[in-house]
Image (cartoon, rainbow, N blue to C red; front, side, top):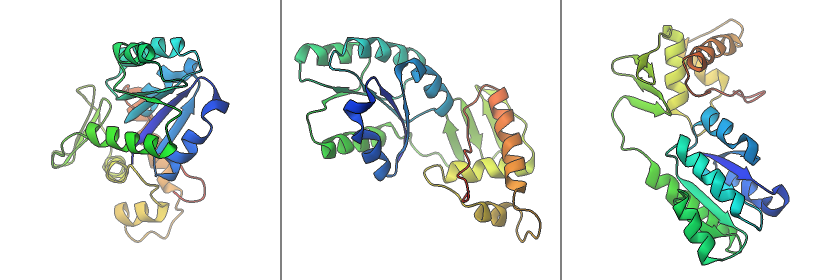
Length: 216
């Protein structure tokens, strides 16, 4: 499971793609091409999918822009099955190319393979999301190499979220882990989470800790 930014040039043509990927447990952010760079910077995705119109020329330019700001794997979906377009996609920085005429099952398999290939080797106590690096053994947080000060609670919240980045964490689970038995207002989580998020954003890091209303 991973975070995917889907750049849609034509929402109707690829309507089943985000639904299928979410069914596999991926977090999908579907945006139009004008918001591609903004979304990639905000979400630090594990994969970018470009889903262009039948004339794929515009997608090559977007692919070049994406590659200029991120080393995230890029999968280009193509309306047709043209060898020239495929060569252009790879020349523009794509990592994979798939005609949309192929089955949705094949797309899901390709996405899974790209995500597995891009997973960094595990290092004990080390978590990284974009420019944000958290060393749990040293209890140190950096953004772009610069130290970021977090309170103990903010640090514990961040580590809990990073260790569970592919699922929604119930508020009760965070409270039990960080505060233990807690008779007070459980919205204390949102207060500390907001402060933590704002510090990371102010330092130029990714946006983390999106709330899931009514759950976590």
